[in-house]
Image (tube, rainbow, N blue to C red):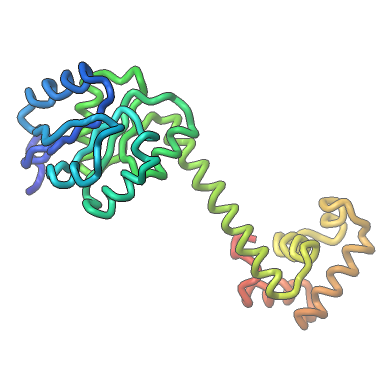
Length: 232
């Protein structure tokens, strides 16, 4: 069913709590039970909970205060395979990029820091139930940066593999990439700390190897064969 006027789902949000501290766990149960749009379908500790327990309870939002103890037992993967619609929220977390990125890789949709209030936890659960992600702005930026680094690394590995298939040496792959950026032999020599004469020889060998008549032809041929990324 669609959202009501306040933007919260008409069907109750079915929450399963995985919290180590019993007092905190019971306090959250009482908090959620006071809300008309929440239903607590189960609770347990991180060391005792099983994926089957969560999906048999029919929960659609998993609220946790830790990740490593269950991630080590492949809990998140099992849960994702059995009930991919279940979304997870971590609260009480450190403001640490590595921990946050690991949580994202495990599939969490919400990441709240230690100073998060009860109202912020409730708001995060509602947001995630609507299909949104929740995390501190600074850590969100670290996720963008990490994705950019990983994409550049994959692109570089793909270019290296393609270059090897083309029979180009590492130095030749460096040169063709710089030529593609419009750099002159003099600029390339300065960039790679080589003599201009050495660069000319490398360029000549590349052109001969790919059967090109000009430097630009060489770039186009290498790129057309998939040996040079479009970003180069």
